[in-house]
Length: 376
Image 1: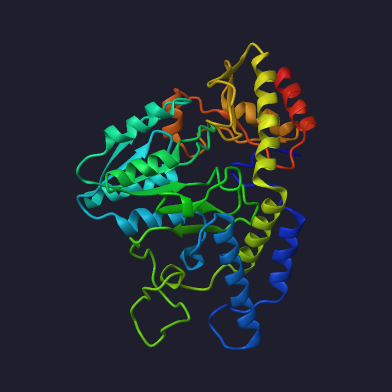
Image 2: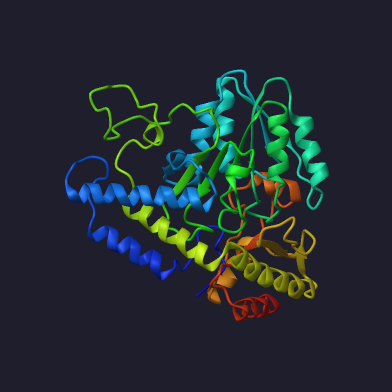
């Protein structure tokens, strides 16, 4: 199987990640819940992952690294923990349903939102679009760092500066950028970074993080046992315990650290360069095929992450995906949980076929993909 669905989750996972998860499963106890040696060792492993994440994202407060089930949970914590009735939010025209569904639910509580149009390859127009969407009730700007459908990268540092200029909080969905694009939080105006652990960081599924770089702390999404202050029924205010009730995904978190170590050793710049080489090559090859429809200019590192979506004239994207699957190629077709992004490109009715490589993808894999598309 040639796996080109890495925007959904990276596969295969590096050997060191698989070994870390297996070792954690063999020797672990509930971290932070008991005083015996095994529990203390587990607590130390959790701390080491938290410290590794702070280092990975160049952040000085490891206690503000919160482990979550996935990026979606991190986004929900921000949206539901920050916004109150009467508040207004600005999002981009490329948002995933991880943002739009909780936000739509919050409209029932008197929260409103506006959509800022993204202009591919024109950051000035995109930033101005966000500026025009801000009003006197705007509490938060929440946007994706990069589209999971089109790979379009937003100028998040400029949008962050804009948010702070207006006294607005800024949150980023980095599901498609973390591990592909360097993010340095200590030198950034990002207030909340929502992270998928199982994509560009190569960790196990069921792992994510929320990094809080703001003095504004969200309300809790869930409450429960944290192993601290057990005499009180009140949820702790201290981080990270405030957001980590219940038994954590210990083996997943240990595997997450191994994933970050893998990316750090490979170097983000090297991974990104390799994936862009493959995507640019694919773009040029697909452009030669008359019935293949491409929607954007050739991906450029300044404006894109290495993702490419296309269609074949007269064919449903799901049918194309099914044929590719029969030929041993795994891709994602349809709407990719991002109807906003498809509406922007006029593909809401057809969907699109998405190609997303990884560090393990070979040029020969892309050549085989092209040959099958030619046959189709």
